[in-house]
Image 1 (cartoon, rainbow, N blue to C red):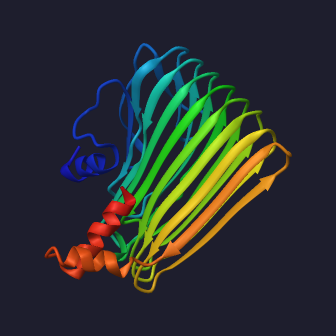
Image 2: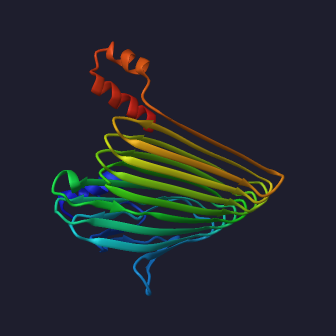
Image 3: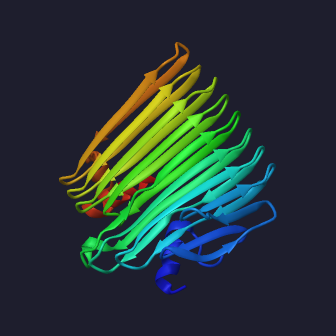
Length: 308
């Protein structure tokens, strides 16, 4: 791998060398490197682009890295990745995509990830999106359209951390989840747009099982003339608990739309939605500026603290 590709890996997966354990690294639309373990197998799909990840029952404490990197302009990459997590597992999956585009053409990655989480299993899923180059340099676009489909079995738990804070000109982020009895889904989204970037996020969670629960929280910052749309739908179809929250900071001439929606289809469903959009408070800026920071530095500190 060259220095550009190594830098992309560091930004999206926190790795600067070949990681330990199971991994699948995809570079410019093709397999770059792969490793499997006794408990985790990774198999190339025969009928379409993508992989199947099989995690054995009882697997605990293991990680799987599946980053995608693109360093060519004009490349459109599409993958279908399916994750089959057995029963009684406790694992972490680290994904994400990084694009380095210094050409005049669009470079894009569409990843369709489907999760099948076994009974009483615990999964942490970390997904980071990062871009550099693109419109601001040579005129080409960096485009990412991730789709995440989640199926949680009885008693399972999934925590999803999804982050996009730089360099993606256009994105349509879709997450759909179905929860069975006693299962829990926690989602934390962090998003920042600048320039004339566009980002659309849509979460749909079906609380089908008794005593299932979800907490969907999005924090975003919109700068310059960028545009964001946040849509969150929770359907309470049984005795369940659901909460969705969108907090956004708007700056310059940007725009943000938040559309939280809750639907109670059971008298035992307990659902809450919240949305707040506003600018940085003046007293916050003044306090930091009295400590010697410029207004720009103070804004950066506030934004970083808000997204962390």
